[in-house]
Structure formats: C-alpha cells, structure tokens
Image 1: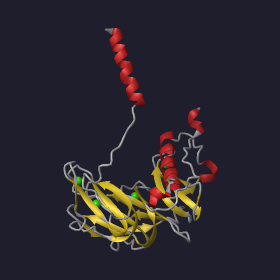
Image 2: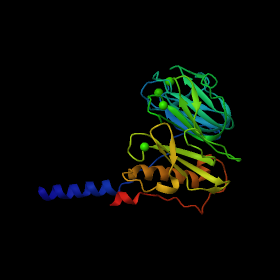
Image 3: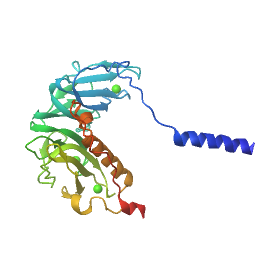
Image 4: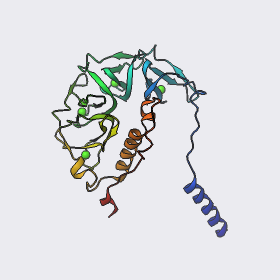
Length: 293
Ligand SMILES: [Ca+2]
Ligand SMILES: [Ca+2]
Ligand SMILES: [Ca+2]
Ligand SMILES: [Ca+2]
C-alpha cells in the first residue's frame, strides 16, 4: 500500500513538474473576429456581472467592446456603449478613477488627443475635456496606479515618437480632474517610451516606475527605473542602483524585465505591424544578485 502510494505520488509530481501550459486560439469561435488593426486591448468588467469583457483599440479603425456572454462567447457592443471611437490608437488601460465602482477607460493615440471614457455602468461618456487632459499624446503604454497613495488612481502615459516627448503622469486631483505632474515629480524621461510597468520594487509601500524606451529610433535602450520617494517625487536610479536594491522582490524584476524586453525586442508583437522582426535582440531576464545571498 505504501509502495503504491509512493509510486502514485511520484507520477503525480512528475506530471505536475513537467506539464506544460498550452493555449488554443478561440478568438473566432467566441465571436472575437475583428479584422481591424489592433494595437492594444484590456479585459475589464464593464457591466459588473462578474465576467470580464474586452476592449480593443484599433489604429485607424473603430475600436471594439465585446461583452462576455456567460463565458460562452462575446457580443460586440461598442456603439451602444458609446466607445466606438476611431483614431490612431496605440494603448489602453482600465481603472476606476472616480471610485464609483464602474471601470473607466483611457486610450493613448499616436500624435492625437488621448481619450478618457468615464463609465456610467451602462455606457461611457467622453470625459477627456472635463478631466482637463485634452492633450496630444504619442502613445502608448498607460498604467493606472496610485503613486501618491491618496486613494485616487493616477495615470501614467508613455509617449513614443520622434522627436521624443516627455511622458505624462496625471495626478488625480479630486476624482474628477487631473494635473500632469510628470516633470515636477522627476519623471523627466524624454526618450521614446514604448511601455511602462509599475510595481513596488523596494517594498516601501509605494509604486515605482519602469519605462521601457528607445534612445534612438530603432535602437533600444536599457530602460529607466524610477524609485518613488514617497513625497510625490521620483528619482532616476537606473545607473546607480537599478538592479542592486536590497530586498527587491525578484519576481517583480523578472516579470517587469521579461515583459519589457519581450515588448521591446519583438516590435511586431507590440505594434501589430508587419515590420521586420528584430532577431538580433534576444529576450533576457535580469535579476537582483543580492537576493541570492
Ligand atoms: Ca462583464
Ligand atoms: Ca468609474
Ligand atoms: Ca493618487
Ligand atoms: Ca517603492
């Protein structure tokens, strides 16, 4: 009996250790058959039914919002929900900026106005001008996070393009309007930012920022790591302590750099374009050696 138990345990553990996660493309069979020029997508529960819906940003074609039908398929509802926006879309992020329980959407366009759609729970309204952020942008990657820990979600938008442009950090002032504080907060990166990741890399309970950027068109840089000083400002620690911060959770670094390097070094995936794959740039993982002590 004991021997049988050990054999079964060995088989189970072997299967567990060496099993692989596989994926099957079910896009068309579930109704996600968009032939647009997708540049960014985000899962969010727009109708608070507990099922994740999907918003897709297209470049030059109408964006799509698919409602999840009990997990069996999707129905496209962008027009009836007021988010059938068409622009040079690049990136999108979802977050409840006004704490009303309904998830809102920010869209980054390339060399065009960014868009903020506020959710009413049964539709969206274009809230960009009311929020005070009717600004042109060249992006990009957007992250909602509460950088100053005041309970109100702020948003950072990475600006791409040549000539290079400073990124935006939109401080949420009153759950209704925003102020761009990127430059005054120390996020003075004027490189061409392709993606942004946020995480608490030094375990001091505030969110730090990592910008994946290119310094010259087509030449990918090392990225920029900003430590949150806890007083509304950031310090660029890329060259001094980027990968040697005591206590940095290794998983965060691995995930951040993996996403960053993957996105940077496979631009065909990032942009959805039919450009040339950068085969010479191999993905790599970085880690904090102090964690190995
Ligand atoms: Ca839903
Ligand atoms: Ca909301
Ligand atoms: Ca905040
Ligand atoms: Ca931190």
